Image 1 (tube, rainbow, N blue to C red):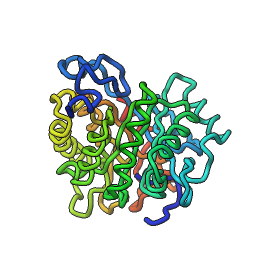
Image 2: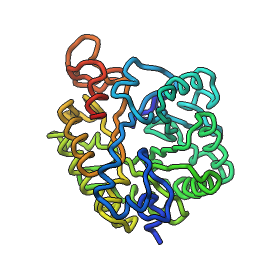
Image 3: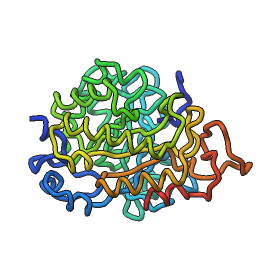
Image 4: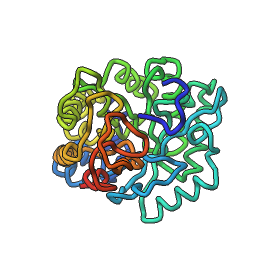
Length: 337
């Protein structure tokens, strides 16, 4: 997904934390892991959370639309070539303004998930030269936000960078040994055919290092010029394809693989021409997620959840509006169900 920073350039079963009773991660809706593995009814009963992405540094009037249970704070990045975590690569993780913003988001009982990476800038694993330093950098950001949820949004060139992938996996495994309550999600690009070989290799690396993955969050957006039809339908097709992949990768059951999934859509006009995700698409994705017992649904991003100022539809994606006709906060409400 886009960053809020200006682009620099445009036994495996146990490791899937929801797969068996021996694993501890439980996603946004906590419940016994044994139920996740064995009971489709229990999986559905746990409910599908709404957890949008939003800027950690700048508030928007639509941030709280739909009363999210969790907020994905975007993004923690490196600044230049160092190994210091910063919001958007520019703000210290203990920045007073950001701390105040996080406190307000938590005021009604919501949690925050720190998202590392994004489409622009450098994820810390590219810069940190050893796992100990990288573990410390991740921990510093989590502590500053008071978070026990960590999201790793890996895309672009970093998705095929085997060195940083291996280092990240090792650091996350260390972090989970230090923090027994840490829940980890990976946010990865997807096509209607499912995850690509790089996304699957990243998950295999996490397995190899002993990372317990609570959720694999699929970016159901920006598919490419050959996909110009129903964006809601594409999201469902992508989810079904990825479900089969996750079931195989983590050696888990049908309901556990669904529960270990999240879906994130780019609302309104996407970055790829002819791709527009509508309010009807959001309702379709929400209904599907509830039916399958998917852990959470999300969107990029809360600041875009309003009609553009001139009141007209747009052919180009904007950072602060959706480009479609809507009431402010309508996508948030649709995703919340």
